[in-house]
Image (cartoon, rainbow, N blue to C red; front, side, top):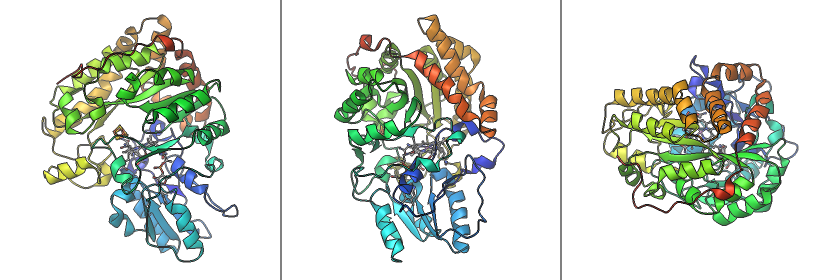
Length: 470
Ligand code: B12
Ligand code: SF4
């Protein structure tokens, strides 16, 4: 089972810190369905060099394909097919462009694998595998335990990544999810018992929920957080602005150990939100979202997209200034990227604004379409400037100064500075496979930050327009 690396993994600009964060959870999930006597190995090319000449040739080669690793995935697939292995491809990019992928595989899979993968295995063992399997039945009931034993934990900063749901209840037009879950449910959860059992199996304190929207099903989330309370876990997750503003859930999450939240603010220009069907963000007071999280002792990882149709050349400075002013601890910036299969892709392609279909460059750091409110150069330069400006020591200091207590300021400096400013140190730790030793540091930074004022976190009233408008 192989997770190929995106092309940049071999480039001098490759950032080990980013790609050594999480192990290949999708493949480890699929490995759980293999029979006990199957000899299986799991290879993540982001953290290890791939050997493609092993002897004997594997019977079955399973490859997970993301958009930016598609070219490399096809290369590896062609190689193994030439050596006589049966090669199967699945994942997000295969689902978006199955015909493209099918040229390099004996079998392709569309959608999540929990229903189709066991069907395929039964067919393949009988010598009757089909060329294409499309997922339609969506459930996480009866999911076998994830084969975490196949993952070399020492290679990852966050070995305890976990997902307890799939998909999301919303429908933003730039998101992968509607295309990936087409033909069946696009949001579903594990049972609370199964989720708690999976959490119990994970060693240490720290967890990172990779769910698109952990607060997406209120009842499930409430029961999950109740079950986690008292477990002594410290965790990070993602949720939408509306769910953070809703009374109650955030406080329960904090009591269960939430210490840092990834929030898709996406844009500070309200026109963009309507244009991209990001309805759950419309009319929300973004400042109140940050204040509510900080008041509850939760750090904020804010995500922003640049280059939407309402963005002009001033969007970069305004976004960064706002994020610093709010005391946001970490931010991820993206250049808007139309992924095949999404509404955004169809719209941009329909307007003949796609510059090329070179998937290697669809990495959210390069401009792959003709923007409206600025030139391509302005978009790309502005994106890099946003990162530089946000992570300058001066900005980190100003962000820290937005905090009330000295302790909170110091933690802000440690966490914000820790990610970007000490990247060479992280890289060394990763290359020497000592990265897991950094986990206690992350745990103590998270542990010292939060939870103390959870009850006091105010719930602001819904506003008719976003506080920040273009
Ligand atoms: C964690 C994560 C990362 C991590 C690690 C990824 C890893 N080790 O697997 C890091 C930080 C490295 C990362 C990086 C990037 N990511 Co990312 N990431 C995610 C995230 C949040 C969760 C993935 C996950 O673990 N899901 C849980 C597991 C259980 O599901 P799964 O991996 O999808 O596997 C299931 C199915 O896909 C399927 N399946 C997968 N492979 C196969 C194979 C077969 C044979 C079968 C049968 C089934 C099958 O079955 C599995 C079980 O259901 C997703 C969002 C999401 N919800 O998927 C984005 C996401 C996958 N990332 C995305 C992108 C764009 C990137 C980057 C390009 C971003 C960037 N600017 O750098 C890079 C490049 C990654 C690359 N290698 O090319 C996009 C992908 C878009 C696309 N069309 O491919 C997503 C969907 C985010 C988004 N909303 O846009 N990412
Ligand atoms: S809220 Fe996030 S995960 Fe859900 S559809 Fe929108 S972008 Fe995708």
